[in-house]
Length: 201
Image (tube, rainbow, N blue to C red; front, side, top):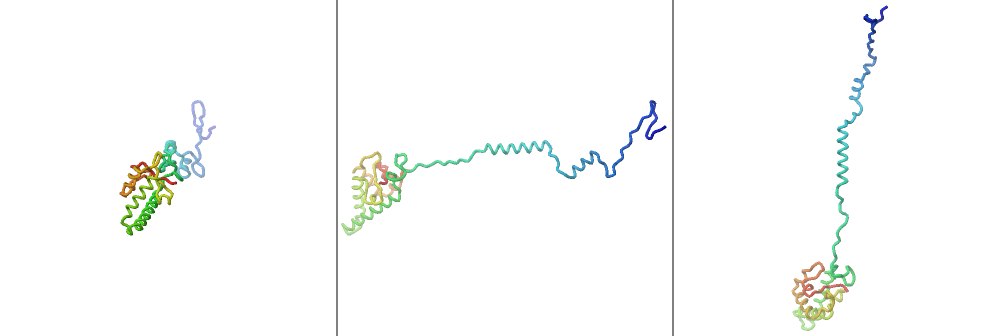
């Protein structure tokens, strides 16, 4: 008796595998699954690209970590008279330029009034001013104008200014220009030449 799909052979009957019947809804093999993955869904990330992306991220993070930090502290500048051992504020500190200009203006106005009272003219104002500043600076380092604004001239290292250094200081003061050339301690050329400094009292 012959079976469907059987072939005669030497030793017996050899059965032929039955052919697969395609499904009704189409082919369900591996190729169809791959084709579906191509059409829709997210593609898997290739190992090379994933490694490159992770490497770039790591390099970026390393660059951010090794970047130098911005400085947060600022160097404070020394105030006038600090290297001389004077305080920053209060009595004994370096007198400001507005105070010194105000004292100079008061002394000049007073000298002008005295000159007009003595001679009836303002021509001798500069002579009265020179005598007043010279004598009062030599005796105590303080003129009328300095007294009113609360400052005085003192000699660095202590001791009185004296008539000799007061003469040098007053002569340079009358030339106008040396007092304007100040250093970091607000000392003009007339102060540096006589080794004096103007401080608050």
